[in-house]
Amino acid sequence: MDMKFCPYCGTARVEATPFCGSCGKPIGGTAPATAAHATAVPAVSAQADGVEEELWRGTPDAVLSPVGARTTKYILTTQRLTVDSGLFGKHNDGIELFRIKDVEVKWSLPQRSRGVGDVVIYSTDQVSPRLKLEAIQKPDEVAALIRQRVYAARQVNRVFMREGL
Image (cartoon, helix red, strand yellow):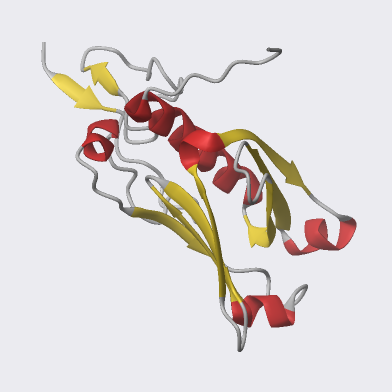
């Protein structure tokens, strides 16, 4: 049988199946062109080659965080999530995707009125165990994309998370 890849999560699938066995989304066309899917999600096998591709880029909302919108940018690649911030002194904070334990989305009342929200990342990273992407557009879609890529990064790096040890 001919092997194809899911346009949403990049998992290999049998062409005859109408739904992805990994993410459960219907197959039939290409991935939607939303903020979370600004560029096509590469297949999981592309990560094994060590190629790092940018999947999403965002900044805080300019109304709710006028300074942050000009001084902070969030970048999600196939291997890590980075936060670049600072006006005069630059700071770069990043987390390898396979280290992420949980992804949480929060919306305050002003954020809900603007259609933005916060994505909070919890990880096993020693330097940054908690990373917050503040006031970003479509936070639920970005969180879903991060979860998909975390799963793919764990498969590529052969990392298994255990709870309750």
